[in-house]
Image (cartoon, rainbow, N blue to C red; front, side, top):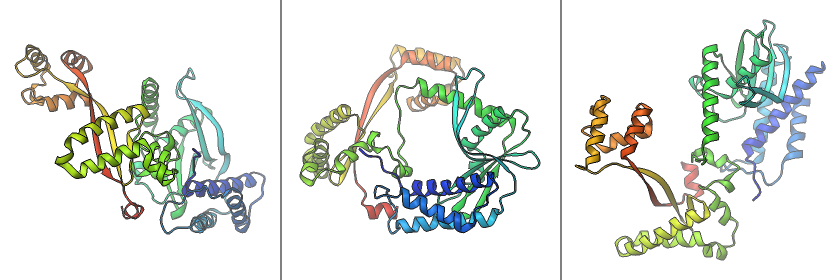
Length: 376
Protein backbone atom coordinates (compact mmCIF):
# COMPACT_ATOMS: atom_id res chain seq x y z
CA UNK A 1 0.00 0.00 0.00
CA UNK A 2 1.47 3.34 -1.01
CA UNK A 3 2.02 5.68 1.92
CA UNK A 4 0.46 9.11 1.45
CA UNK A 5 1.81 12.42 2.70
CA UNK A 6 -0.56 14.85 4.40
CA UNK A 7 -0.66 18.39 3.08
CA UNK A 8 0.43 19.76 6.48
CA UNK A 9 3.67 17.75 6.31
CA UNK A 10 4.13 18.73 2.66
CA UNK A 11 3.74 22.43 3.55
CA UNK A 12 6.20 22.13 6.44
CA UNK A 13 8.84 20.46 4.27
CA UNK A 14 8.62 23.13 1.56
CA UNK A 15 8.90 25.97 4.11
CA UNK A 16 11.86 24.23 5.77
CA UNK A 17 13.49 23.84 2.34
CA UNK A 18 13.11 27.54 1.56
CA UNK A 19 14.59 28.63 4.92
CA UNK A 20 17.44 26.16 4.47
CA UNK A 21 18.24 27.79 1.12
CA UNK A 22 18.09 31.26 2.70
CA UNK A 23 20.67 30.44 5.39
CA UNK A 24 22.94 28.41 3.11
CA UNK A 25 23.22 31.36 0.74
CA UNK A 26 23.90 33.66 3.69
CA UNK A 27 26.86 31.44 4.59
CA UNK A 28 28.43 32.60 1.30
CA UNK A 29 27.49 36.26 1.84
CA UNK A 30 24.50 36.19 -0.48
CA UNK A 31 21.22 37.51 0.93
CA UNK A 32 18.17 36.37 -1.01
CA UNK A 33 15.55 39.04 -1.54
CA UNK A 34 12.07 38.25 -0.30
CA UNK A 35 10.89 37.76 -3.88
CA UNK A 36 13.74 35.30 -4.53
CA UNK A 37 12.87 33.36 -1.40
CA UNK A 38 9.17 33.15 -2.35
CA UNK A 39 10.06 32.16 -5.92
CA UNK A 40 12.30 29.35 -4.63
CA UNK A 41 9.48 28.15 -2.34
CA UNK A 42 7.03 28.12 -5.27
CA UNK A 43 9.51 26.18 -7.40
CA UNK A 44 9.85 23.57 -4.63
CA UNK A 45 6.07 23.34 -4.33
CA UNK A 46 5.51 22.87 -8.07
CA UNK A 47 8.33 20.34 -8.36
CA UNK A 48 7.22 18.12 -5.48
CA UNK A 49 3.41 18.42 -5.51
CA UNK A 50 1.34 15.52 -6.85
CA UNK A 51 -2.15 14.12 -6.40
CA UNK A 52 -1.08 11.67 -3.67
CA UNK A 53 -0.77 14.53 -1.17
CA UNK A 54 -3.81 14.25 1.12
CA UNK A 55 -5.93 17.24 2.15
CA UNK A 56 -8.10 16.12 5.07
CA UNK A 57 -9.63 19.41 6.24
CA UNK A 58 -12.92 20.04 4.52
CA UNK A 59 -13.21 23.29 2.56
CA UNK A 60 -9.46 23.89 2.20
CA UNK A 61 -7.55 23.62 -1.07
CA UNK A 62 -3.90 23.12 -1.99
CA UNK A 63 -3.72 26.83 -2.81
CA UNK A 64 -4.84 27.71 0.74
CA UNK A 65 -1.90 25.76 2.16
CA UNK A 66 0.49 27.15 -0.45
CA UNK A 67 -0.52 30.72 0.41
CA UNK A 68 -0.04 29.94 4.12
CA UNK A 69 3.57 28.97 3.41
CA UNK A 70 4.14 32.21 1.50
CA UNK A 71 2.73 34.20 4.43
CA UNK A 72 4.97 32.31 6.89
CA UNK A 73 8.09 33.10 4.86
CA UNK A 74 7.12 36.73 4.36
CA UNK A 75 6.51 37.29 8.10
CA UNK A 76 9.75 35.53 9.00
CA UNK A 77 11.78 37.51 6.49
CA UNK A 78 10.40 40.86 7.64
CA UNK A 79 10.97 39.99 11.31
CA UNK A 80 14.61 38.82 11.06
CA UNK A 81 16.16 40.42 7.95
CA UNK A 82 19.08 41.00 7.40
CA UNK A 83 19.59 37.84 9.53
CA UNK A 84 22.70 39.05 11.35
CA UNK A 85 21.52 38.35 14.89
CA UNK A 86 24.00 35.47 15.24
CA UNK A 87 26.47 33.28 13.35
CA UNK A 88 24.87 30.20 11.83
CA UNK A 89 27.14 27.19 12.38
CA UNK A 90 24.76 24.42 11.38
CA UNK A 91 21.88 24.11 8.88
CA UNK A 92 19.67 21.02 8.68
CA UNK A 93 22.24 18.97 10.61
CA UNK A 94 21.30 15.60 9.10
CA UNK A 95 24.37 13.82 10.43
CA UNK A 96 24.00 15.09 13.99
CA UNK A 97 24.74 11.86 15.84
CA UNK A 98 25.60 11.64 19.53
CA UNK A 99 25.52 9.18 22.41
CA UNK A 100 23.79 9.45 25.76
CA UNK A 101 26.47 7.27 27.36
CA UNK A 102 30.23 6.97 27.22
CA UNK A 103 30.18 3.58 25.52
CA UNK A 104 28.12 4.67 22.48
CA UNK A 105 25.39 2.18 23.41
CA UNK A 106 22.61 4.77 23.40
CA UNK A 107 22.98 6.73 20.18
CA UNK A 108 20.63 9.51 19.11
CA UNK A 109 20.39 10.89 15.58
CA UNK A 110 19.04 14.41 15.34
CA UNK A 111 17.86 16.79 12.63
CA UNK A 112 18.47 20.34 13.82
CA UNK A 113 16.84 22.95 11.60
CA UNK A 114 19.43 25.58 12.47
CA UNK A 115 22.21 26.01 15.03
CA UNK A 116 23.40 29.55 15.82
CA UNK A 117 26.04 31.09 18.06
CA UNK A 118 25.37 34.63 19.31
CA UNK A 119 28.00 37.31 19.85
CA UNK A 120 27.77 36.53 23.57
CA UNK A 121 28.67 32.89 22.94
CA UNK A 122 25.17 31.51 23.50
CA UNK A 123 24.29 28.53 21.32
CA UNK A 124 20.76 28.59 19.92
CA UNK A 125 18.93 25.52 18.63
CA UNK A 126 16.20 26.68 16.24
CA UNK A 127 13.17 24.64 15.19
CA UNK A 128 10.65 25.76 12.54
CA UNK A 129 7.00 24.84 13.06
CA UNK A 130 4.10 25.30 10.61
CA UNK A 131 1.54 23.71 12.94
CA UNK A 132 -1.81 25.34 13.54
CA UNK A 133 -1.40 25.87 17.29
CA UNK A 134 1.16 27.09 19.83
CA UNK A 135 1.76 24.84 22.86
CA UNK A 136 1.72 26.21 26.38
CA UNK A 137 5.09 27.34 27.73
CA UNK A 138 5.01 24.52 30.31
CA UNK A 139 4.76 21.97 27.49
CA UNK A 140 7.75 23.47 25.67
CA UNK A 141 9.72 23.53 28.92
CA UNK A 142 9.16 19.76 29.07
CA UNK A 143 9.91 19.15 25.36
CA UNK A 144 12.33 16.26 24.89
CA UNK A 145 13.47 16.73 21.30
CA UNK A 146 15.33 20.02 21.47
CA UNK A 147 16.58 19.27 24.99
CA UNK A 148 18.14 16.03 23.70
CA UNK A 149 19.75 18.07 20.93
CA UNK A 150 21.22 20.31 23.64
CA UNK A 151 22.83 17.25 25.25
CA UNK A 152 24.39 16.46 21.88
CA UNK A 153 25.55 20.04 21.32
CA UNK A 154 27.20 20.16 24.73
CA UNK A 155 29.04 16.92 23.90
CA UNK A 156 30.14 18.29 20.52
CA UNK A 157 31.15 21.69 21.94
CA UNK A 158 32.36 20.99 25.53
CA UNK A 159 33.16 24.65 26.26
CA UNK A 160 29.63 25.94 25.60
CA UNK A 161 28.25 27.76 28.64
CA UNK A 162 24.64 28.48 27.67
CA UNK A 163 22.19 26.94 25.20
CA UNK A 164 18.82 28.39 24.28
CA UNK A 165 16.05 26.30 22.68
CA UNK A 166 13.95 28.31 20.22
CA UNK A 167 10.78 27.38 18.36
CA UNK A 168 9.49 29.50 15.47
CA UNK A 169 5.71 29.09 15.11
CA UNK A 170 5.66 30.51 11.62
CA UNK A 171 1.90 30.52 11.05
CA UNK A 172 1.58 32.90 14.02
CA UNK A 173 4.83 34.86 13.44
CA UNK A 174 5.78 33.92 17.00
CA UNK A 175 9.07 32.89 18.64
CA UNK A 176 9.07 30.89 21.89
CA UNK A 177 12.17 29.86 23.85
CA UNK A 178 13.20 27.64 26.75
CA UNK A 179 16.35 27.03 28.82
CA UNK A 180 17.29 23.81 30.64
CA UNK A 181 19.37 23.43 33.79
CA UNK A 182 22.18 20.87 33.96
CA UNK A 183 20.05 18.89 36.44
CA UNK A 184 17.12 18.78 34.00
CA UNK A 185 19.40 17.59 31.20
CA UNK A 186 20.86 14.84 33.38
CA UNK A 187 17.37 13.71 34.40
CA UNK A 188 16.34 13.65 30.72
CA UNK A 189 19.45 11.66 29.79
CA UNK A 190 18.70 9.02 32.43
CA UNK A 191 14.97 8.91 31.58
CA UNK A 192 15.74 8.48 27.87
CA UNK A 193 18.20 5.65 28.53
CA UNK A 194 15.59 3.94 30.73
CA UNK A 195 12.96 4.41 28.00
CA UNK A 196 15.28 2.93 25.34
CA UNK A 197 15.90 -0.09 27.59
CA UNK A 198 12.18 -0.52 28.12
CA UNK A 199 11.37 -0.28 24.39
CA UNK A 200 14.11 -2.73 23.43
CA UNK A 201 12.94 -5.21 26.07
CA UNK A 202 9.29 -4.96 25.03
CA UNK A 203 8.01 -7.67 22.73
CA UNK A 204 4.91 -5.81 21.59
CA UNK A 205 4.38 -2.30 20.23
CA UNK A 206 1.16 -0.94 21.70
CA UNK A 207 -0.36 1.66 19.45
CA UNK A 208 -2.28 4.63 20.83
CA UNK A 209 -5.29 5.99 18.95
CA UNK A 210 -5.61 9.78 19.20
CA UNK A 211 -6.85 12.67 17.06
CA UNK A 212 -3.38 12.70 15.45
CA UNK A 213 -4.10 9.38 13.73
CA UNK A 214 -5.53 11.30 10.76
CA UNK A 215 -2.02 12.61 10.02
CA UNK A 216 -0.28 9.24 10.35
CA UNK A 217 1.23 7.66 7.22
CA UNK A 218 1.41 4.12 8.62
CA UNK A 219 -2.20 2.96 8.77
CA UNK A 220 -1.32 -0.09 6.66
CA UNK A 221 0.76 -1.42 9.57
CA UNK A 222 -1.48 -0.43 12.50
CA UNK A 223 -3.87 -2.99 14.06
CA UNK A 224 -6.42 -0.22 14.57
CA UNK A 225 -6.34 0.99 10.94
CA UNK A 226 -4.95 -1.65 8.61
CA UNK A 227 -8.28 -3.38 7.98
CA UNK A 228 -9.70 -0.04 6.85
CA UNK A 229 -6.77 0.29 4.43
CA UNK A 230 -7.37 -3.26 3.21
CA UNK A 231 -11.06 -2.78 2.37
CA UNK A 232 -11.06 0.91 1.44
CA UNK A 233 -10.03 0.33 -2.17
CA UNK A 234 -12.30 -2.68 -2.78
CA UNK A 235 -15.19 -2.44 -5.28
CA UNK A 236 -18.63 -2.55 -3.56
CA UNK A 237 -19.27 -6.25 -4.12
CA UNK A 238 -15.80 -7.32 -2.99
CA UNK A 239 -16.07 -5.01 0.00
CA UNK A 240 -19.32 -6.62 1.12
CA UNK A 241 -17.88 -10.11 0.56
CA UNK A 242 -14.70 -9.52 2.59
CA UNK A 243 -14.65 -11.71 5.70
CA UNK A 244 -14.13 -8.93 8.25
CA UNK A 245 -16.78 -6.67 6.70
CA UNK A 246 -19.23 -9.56 6.60
CA UNK A 247 -18.58 -10.39 10.25
CA UNK A 248 -18.99 -6.77 11.37
CA UNK A 249 -22.19 -6.33 9.34
CA UNK A 250 -23.66 -9.52 10.77
CA UNK A 251 -22.54 -8.55 14.27
CA UNK A 252 -24.04 -5.07 13.86
CA UNK A 253 -27.32 -6.58 12.68
CA UNK A 254 -27.35 -8.93 15.65
CA UNK A 255 -26.53 -6.01 17.93
CA UNK A 256 -29.60 -4.12 16.66
CA UNK A 257 -31.89 -7.08 17.29
CA UNK A 258 -30.63 -7.28 20.88
CA UNK A 259 -32.36 -10.01 22.91
CA UNK A 260 -33.59 -12.00 19.92
CA UNK A 261 -30.04 -12.37 18.63
CA UNK A 262 -28.01 -12.99 21.83
CA UNK A 263 -27.06 -16.51 20.79
CA UNK A 264 -26.05 -15.41 17.29
CA UNK A 265 -24.06 -12.51 18.72
CA UNK A 266 -22.16 -14.97 20.88
CA UNK A 267 -21.20 -17.06 17.88
CA UNK A 268 -20.21 -14.01 15.85
CA UNK A 269 -18.27 -12.65 18.82
CA UNK A 270 -16.14 -15.79 18.85
CA UNK A 271 -15.73 -15.56 15.08
CA UNK A 272 -14.60 -11.94 15.41
CA UNK A 273 -12.10 -12.88 18.14
CA UNK A 274 -10.74 -15.65 15.93
CA UNK A 275 -10.56 -13.26 12.95
CA UNK A 276 -8.75 -10.60 15.04
CA UNK A 277 -6.18 -13.14 16.20
CA UNK A 278 -5.69 -14.59 12.73
CA UNK A 279 -5.29 -11.23 10.95
CA UNK A 280 -3.48 -9.44 13.77
CA UNK A 281 -6.00 -6.60 13.86
CA UNK A 282 -7.76 -4.84 16.69
CA UNK A 283 -10.38 -2.83 14.77
CA UNK A 284 -12.46 -4.58 12.10
CA UNK A 285 -14.38 -2.45 9.62
CA UNK A 286 -17.92 -3.09 8.38
CA UNK A 287 -20.24 -1.05 6.16
CA UNK A 288 -21.38 1.48 8.75
CA UNK A 289 -20.07 -0.09 11.94
CA UNK A 290 -16.70 -1.19 13.24
CA UNK A 291 -15.85 -3.73 15.91
CA UNK A 292 -12.94 -3.37 18.31
CA UNK A 293 -11.56 -6.62 19.75
CA UNK A 294 -9.28 -5.94 22.73
CA UNK A 295 -7.21 -8.56 24.51
CA UNK A 296 -6.07 -7.93 28.06
CA UNK A 297 -4.46 -9.88 30.86
CA UNK A 298 -6.57 -9.85 34.04
CA UNK A 299 -5.27 -10.51 37.54
CA UNK A 300 -7.23 -13.17 39.41
CA UNK A 301 -6.93 -13.19 43.21
CA UNK A 302 -7.75 -16.00 45.67
CA UNK A 303 -11.46 -16.37 46.36
CA UNK A 304 -12.90 -15.21 49.68
CA UNK A 305 -12.21 -17.52 52.64
CA UNK A 306 -9.62 -19.50 50.64
CA UNK A 307 -6.42 -20.35 52.61
CA UNK A 308 -4.33 -18.37 50.13
CA UNK A 309 -6.35 -15.23 50.84
CA UNK A 310 -5.40 -15.39 54.52
CA UNK A 311 -1.69 -15.58 53.61
CA UNK A 312 -2.09 -12.67 51.19
CA UNK A 313 -3.78 -10.63 53.92
CA UNK A 314 -0.85 -11.24 56.31
CA UNK A 315 1.69 -10.03 53.71
CA UNK A 316 -0.17 -6.78 53.04
CA UNK A 317 -0.73 -6.07 56.76
CA UNK A 318 2.96 -6.68 57.48
CA UNK A 319 3.81 -4.07 54.85
CA UNK A 320 1.52 -1.51 56.56
CA UNK A 321 -0.66 -1.11 53.47
CA UNK A 322 -3.86 -2.76 54.68
CA UNK A 323 -5.85 0.48 54.79
CA UNK A 324 -5.13 1.16 51.10
CA UNK A 325 -6.98 -1.95 49.96
CA UNK A 326 -10.06 -1.59 52.17
CA UNK A 327 -10.18 -4.98 53.84
CA UNK A 328 -8.60 -6.70 50.83
CA UNK A 329 -10.92 -5.14 48.25
CA UNK A 330 -9.57 -6.61 45.02
CA UNK A 331 -10.07 -3.48 42.86
CA UNK A 332 -7.68 -1.12 44.75
CA UNK A 333 -5.25 -4.05 45.20
CA UNK A 334 -5.27 -4.65 41.43
CA UNK A 335 -4.79 -0.92 40.76
CA UNK A 336 -1.84 -0.73 43.17
CA UNK A 337 -0.11 -3.66 41.47
CA UNK A 338 -0.74 -2.51 37.89
CA UNK A 339 0.34 1.07 38.67
CA UNK A 340 3.51 -0.18 40.37
CA UNK A 341 2.87 2.02 43.43
CA UNK A 342 4.20 -0.49 45.92
CA UNK A 343 7.67 -1.90 46.52
CA UNK A 344 8.72 -4.39 43.81
CA UNK A 345 9.65 -7.07 46.35
CA UNK A 346 6.22 -6.78 47.97
CA UNK A 347 4.47 -7.05 44.59
CA UNK A 348 6.56 -10.13 43.81
CA UNK A 349 5.35 -11.79 47.03
CA UNK A 350 1.73 -10.89 46.27
CA UNK A 351 1.98 -12.25 42.71
CA UNK A 352 2.63 -15.71 44.16
CA UNK A 353 -1.08 -15.73 45.04
CA UNK A 354 -2.28 -14.26 41.76
CA UNK A 355 -3.05 -16.01 38.50
CA UNK A 356 -3.31 -14.28 35.12
CA UNK A 357 -6.25 -14.88 32.81
CA UNK A 358 -6.66 -13.61 29.27
CA UNK A 359 -9.66 -11.34 28.96
CA UNK A 360 -11.19 -10.09 25.75
CA UNK A 361 -13.75 -7.41 24.97
CA UNK A 362 -15.69 -7.08 21.72
CA UNK A 363 -17.27 -3.67 21.22
CA UNK A 364 -19.21 -2.41 18.20
CA UNK A 365 -19.61 1.26 17.33
CA UNK A 366 -20.95 3.32 14.47
CA UNK A 367 -18.38 4.75 12.06
CA UNK A 368 -18.29 8.55 11.87
CA UNK A 369 -19.18 10.24 8.62
CA UNK A 370 -16.79 12.86 7.20
CA UNK A 371 -19.27 15.57 8.26
CA UNK A 372 -19.35 14.26 11.86
CA UNK A 373 -15.54 14.12 12.00
CA UNK A 374 -15.30 17.74 10.85
CA UNK A 375 -17.84 18.82 13.46
CA UNK A 376 -15.89 16.96 16.15
